[in-house]
Image 1: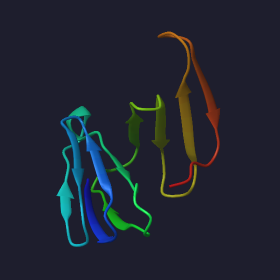
Image 2: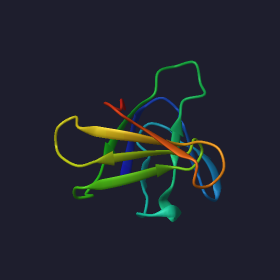
Image 3: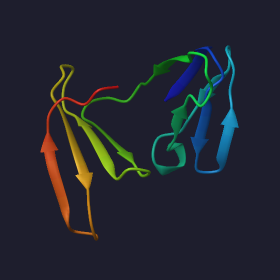
Image 4: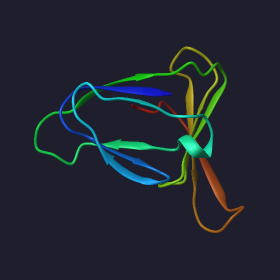
Length: 100
């Protein structure tokens, strides 16, 4: 996964901490837990970024902050979001379209 900041000054959260980015910054992240990240716009101006991925399908993405999983099985919008709630093993699932 790579992210190119087009405008603004977003913050990149990752397993080692946070980095403040600006327009023109390119970040390349590995697959798996080492590449877990979240791009946040904590500023008042608009931030725009281009996300590039070479991951094939199916693609399964875990968001450890929220306990959500994004499971994409095809090129269409047939996505499923699974949210972990409660103790381990007490998961609930809901299907539907997940937004970016």
